[in-house]
Length: 616
Image (cartoon, rainbow, N blue to C red; front, top):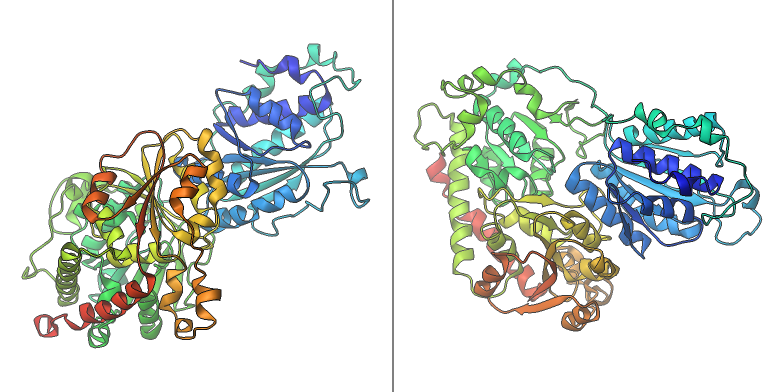
C-alpha cells in the first residue's frame, strides 16, 4: 500500500513530498495536474509515483493547467491539485483561482518556492509568492521547510488535511499552499541520516487516522416555508445560474416549492431546470423576451421574489426587478453576497432542498392534494390547463405569455435555414444525447442559451465559468470537464477559443471525447449589441477585433479533427450520436452584424406580438 517509502528515504525533500501526496491520496484525491519545472521536482516525482490512485497529468501551460483542473473539479465535485514551479509560473494560475473562488469550485493550488535565504536577492526564478492570489483563496499558507522530525511530519499531515477541508467547507473554493524546497530537488541522497525513521515511522499507523475522512458540510435543519410566501399571490421564483452536484434533486425541490406556492419559475438557460422540464409545470423560459413588452412587464410586476442561486444573465430581468423593488429572498448555502441589485433582500444561507428534508411523505400534499412522496409527485408533472380554477390569475398570465412566446420562438427557429448563431443553442437543446455534459462559453453563447434554450427532458449537465465571466481558459475548462466523463460538447465563439488555443496541448493526455461547436463570426459578436457598435472607427479594430483565422489549419496544427458545418441538418447528424474519443471542431460560420440586426428586430417582434387581451 505504501510503495513510495524507498524513494521517500532518498532525502528530506522526497520524504516531505511523500507525506504530502500520501495524505492527499488517503483523503480521496484522484487527480493532480502537474506543470513542468525544477523547483517542483520533489512533488512531481511523488505524485507520479502515486499512480494509479492519483492520476498525474502533465500540462505545459500553467493557465491552461489551472483551468483544466477547474473543469475536473466542476465535473467531480471534489478537489483537484494543480502544481507548478517557482517564479511567474504560479501567477498564471491567477485567473482560474479567481474563477474557482467566485464559482465556488474546490481547487488545491500548490506553488513551489525557493527557500527564504534565496528571496529578495535576485536569485533566478524567484518572486514574492506569499498571498500571491490576494483574498481569493478560502485559506492560504506557506509550509515550513522540509524536516524529517516526526513532529514536523505530523504538522505537514495536519496542514494538508486542513487544506483539503478548507477547499470544501463551509463554502467550496480554492486553497493555496506555497511550498519551499532547498536543493537537492531530484530524489538523490542529500547526506541526511533518515535511518531512525525505519524504527519510528509506521505508515499504516501514521496515515490510519485520516483514512476515509470526508469533510462534512455544516449541518442545516429542515426549514419550514414562510407563511408570508404562502399568503402572496404575486410571487415569482428565479432559478439562476447553478451547477448542483445532484441536479435532479435540486430541480425537484424547486418544482415542489413552485407548486406549493403556485408561483412561476423563471429559469435561467444555465439552470438545470430547463433540462428537467417535465418536473415543473410552471416553468418560464422566455422571460427575457416577455419583459421587453413594457405594458406586460408592468402588469406582471411581482410583490415577492425568491432568487435561488445567482441572478440570471438577462439584463431585462435585472432592470425589471430593480425598477419594481419587490421584497426578495436569496437562497444559497454560501457566505457570499448574491444580490448585485442591492435591493430589499434577505439571504437565506441554506439549500432549496432543505425546505423538504424529512418531509417527503407528505410533500405531495402541499401542492395539489395528491399523496405519495416527492419523487412520485414530480416524476412527470404535466403542464396544467390554463383554465384550471385553482390557478391564481398572476400565474395563469405568466404561463399564457410563456406559451405564446415559446411557440413563436420555436416556429421561427424551426423554419430558419440561414446560419443564425442563436439557432445553434436552440437546436442543441433538443439534439444532444441524454445526460451530455455541455460547457457553454461566455459572451454571446451564454446569452443565446438564455434567449433560445428550449426546455427539454434530456438531463444535460450544463457547465460554465460564470464566476468572473471571463473568456480565459474556455477550452481547458471544457477539456477538464470532459476528461474521463461521458462524451461532451462545448459551445463557444471564435475569440474565446482563440484565447485558449494552448488548451489543445492537453490532447495527448485527454481521455474521452469533446466536440467543440465553434460559432465563428470573426470577432466579438457581443459588442455588436452595445452602443459602441455605432461608432466605427474605432469599433471594428478595438471591439469587433476580427482575427481572420483559418480554423481548419489551426485544427490541423494540433492534429484535431475538423469539419465545416454548412446546414442545420448536418449539425444535427454530427451531434447525435457523439464520438467516444478525441477532440473535434465543428465550425459554423455566421455574420455577426446580420445576427445582431436579427436579434434587434425579432426580439421586438416577439415582445410586441404577445396578445395582451388574452391575458386580461
